[in-house]
Image (tube, rainbow, N blue to C red; front, side):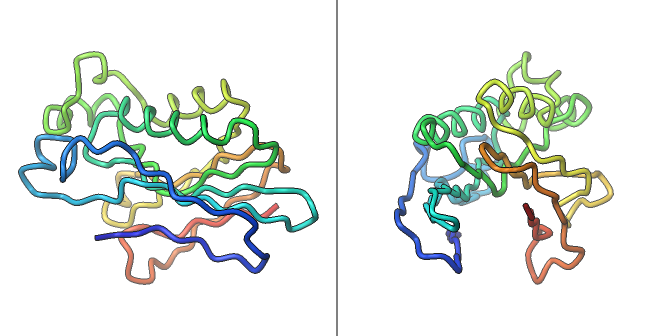
Length: 185
């Protein structure tokens, strides 16, 4: 089983865990159920006050073995709970892998509908975020080590109410299948 966590050098003034509705005990896709993939279906949120004003940071893991519409629904659930936060950072493994060519090749395994086949998920995420006054911090470097040559950018930051940060992708993985991603304001 996997879990999320956040470490802070500032005192945490509020904390909560948001669970996503589970489709089943395992992944919502046919292949995920067949392989018995267990995923972390939650987000961990903390609020800190580094300069006297609240800053909420949400670390999440969106469903992997599912079509993009499932991940957007999970994001909707998160953003709805934090819609009044003036300063917000949403970060983590967004699992944004869908591109038209890949969708045609493997979409049937992930329960894609015909309308999902033409989605470029990173573009969808950027537009979705902009409609909610969130900025997708550009991440041009691949973050998924297992398929680095395919250029998978699965890990992202959405920000609101802070300066547009610079983003760094750590070249080492430290034993993970993802490269650590960090922003600096």
